[in-house]
Length: 489
Image (cartoon, rainbow, N blue to C red; front, top):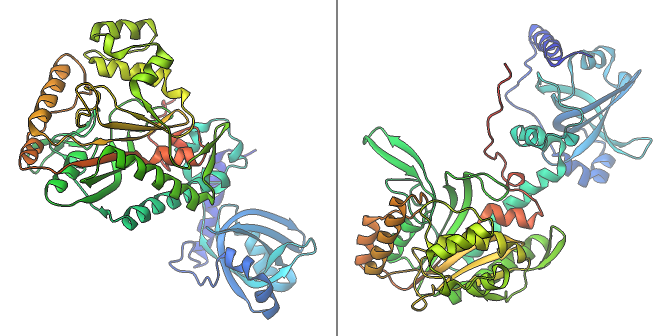
């Protein structure tokens, strides 16, 4: 069996043969009259008219039976069978096809629609034209490859053969469009804030750092758009949202990718309780529009998005599943408990950060139906307003063990915000690399006054992962970040 290089050489010879006959293997335009999906939909009408149409697509199979041959080709809408007959197109044209066409090539096929003897909708081809010559052969059994990472690395091949995967990306587009439509319908204005920032902030996360030559200064890819969106609230906008990329220089696993899509929105004069009602109504609306039902299968469970979602206190959850009384333990006791439970914690982590790691391992996986976790301990969210002395006016939405939403009433007291930043800097100096940075320009903006406000961040990739019943973010991100292949020496 010829190897890949031999197959490529053979195709190059065919390419040279085409060019030697003054045939452009990569023409600039096509005379397509219908998509394949349109031809199939209007098959009866078109076939009765006996008018010739022009379809285009990638050749997926070639089957020759003497003086008659069949091909399957597909465009971005559907697949159809094509029939070539020596008595229809002539011997010269018929043989030329087999001398030059390979599976994977793109064809423009002209002909009339007929029904084959086996009842299949078919284009009876009278003429054809090259649209693009492929130099590498398509893998014959791509869908069945055991190396799943190769599907992510060569997504373009995965999409050709894996219809289920292609449908995921169609659903991704629908979900994102529905999010935007819902936000605009509810009076929110879409805005854009800097992706390159002189100081990263808005979340506890490690950033990507680069250098801006024009100003000879270091800048960071944003970990979140929050602090700039709040500046717009200070400036007088009341309802704003941004849907775009964020970047965190952290671990990669089934629910984390270094660059990811997030939507953040801010609502002046609203609080975290109003935000909960908004979130659950929005998600229910999106799920119904996409699936025509409020229920979605996630893993082995049927998840019901019908509001209202249950609300559970963070401390109650920690007590129920990890047997921890948060208020009765200091930082060192919490660290000892984490070690006892086999939970890894980063150097310099505070009490709230340690409790969060325990919660992630022991509590979050227990939650399947959409559930709001509320009133996290002080220290948990640097930018959240207090509910009382020890609790925050905060919420997280968990679905099928996955954190989907972080939201809270926003801290708008500049004095307390500075104290929170200072506390985070102490943790940073102790070795906690994900501590929130102290943003002096943001503090100055707060000192000019920010109205009461609720804010929310939604992991869009995670939402799509859940709604498409995928087990890994890599299935719903077209080109996920991959570790380089080891070079074979």
